[in-house]
Length: 364
Ligand code: BGC
Image 1: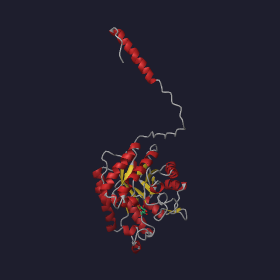
Image 2: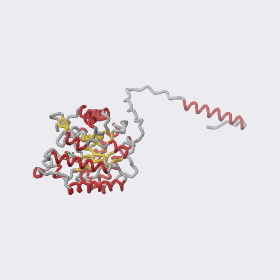
Image 3: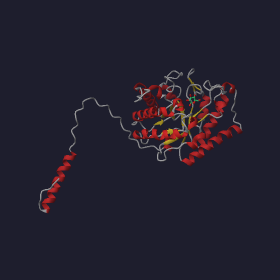
Image 4: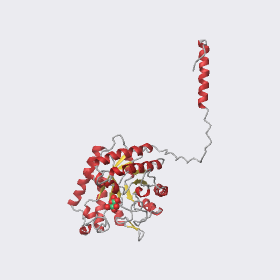
């Protein structure tokens, strides 16, 4: 703005008046424009401070997979329809969290913009609310998209990222007690190199709306501990919890499993806690512990369990041993799963299988 020529003192008084006038104009609130349509209510922002990954991992100390429901092609197809009561039971029994497997890919458009069905979102929202109402932390994952990603990872990449963009935006205002897990058990042609790149692009999309939400990520080859050394995570992202799944010895835990070819020939395999059997587990867990120390990441044993075709005594011994070995190394754990073939809870009698529950949660 050009100032008129004035004496120095007048000039400064004039300047002050101009500055005051300009400032006053600037602070006059804008009169809001009349909306032309009803605005979508903005989500209430989370007022909570960020929770670091190690602290959050403690809250996953005793988790149950609430499985065979929302990762079935359609909820109910695999015999489980989530009920309010399940969340109550899980909390009352002393578990701290649930991991919720979700087949997002079956409820979204196949082509761009890959919109997720709003009704399905409502169902997942309901499950998340049930967890919160029962003081449970909840991990929402993407389950069984690994089947397509294993065959054509590059062909599905755009859709995968678009799904996470929607999920991240949808839940951006939710409390810290909701965690995301981008993909269950990456495997097949989704190699470590491709997976590492995909983690970076997926986290970029998630971080745009959820800068500090804790995210669970595991290695390739079905979240196998042997692939941990190939997992590369963005060094500057400290809101990551690293997961692995443990079903060793597989011929024991998966004996008679209908989805594992040839597994009937393993029926009768026992696990009796011999020194050799125990050392096998300890060796594996020491490998994970060493990786965690070197890489300074918290560890979540996201799935472990033995199928119902194994004898109950062996299942109890194995479950207790694996859980204690995890705890001894500060790994949080999540039993696979609540009420189906590996189940802790018997839906036909509405009773807990107390032997398995005690194996996980021994009396203090
Ligand atoms: C799979 C389930 C399977 C379980 C044990 C999970 O990661 O998604 O379908 O029952 O592992 O094999």
